[in-house]
Image 1 (cartoon, rainbow, N blue to C red):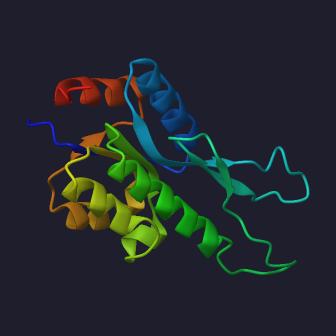
Image 2: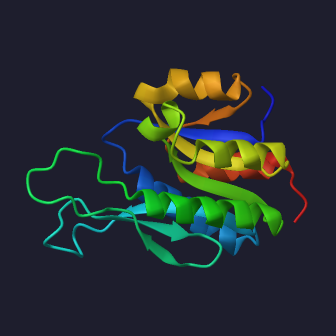
Length: 173
């Protein structure tokens, strides 16, 4: 089976995908891979008054971008801050322009499945010839495959699988 420069870790809700991607990116960085993109981290255990708090980590600079916006008690609206997504977009596009080896975007989720989020930035990376790694929940797998036209490598939620995929790409560093 061919190895595509677009890979998605397929995960279930019970998989700790954020931690897995953090471990994988750390291992890739230690191997000299110049990373760009953003990873999501839940920070609810750090911010007690906000049990759903999230942040984006800019993989190129280490900057933390608060991703959750405060909507008040009882709100059922999406808490993702559009400004944070815009900053994530700028981080991804800048990393592509600066010639990183790999773009990592935390996930192809509900926003991306419906045409928003960081979907355009995923396409930008591919068009620029920069390999892309993301994660996709099983419930959005059909949308992911439609987005990629099936030209992608699907990976199990395993750090070693991510590292093997990268090694098989044979990207010149």
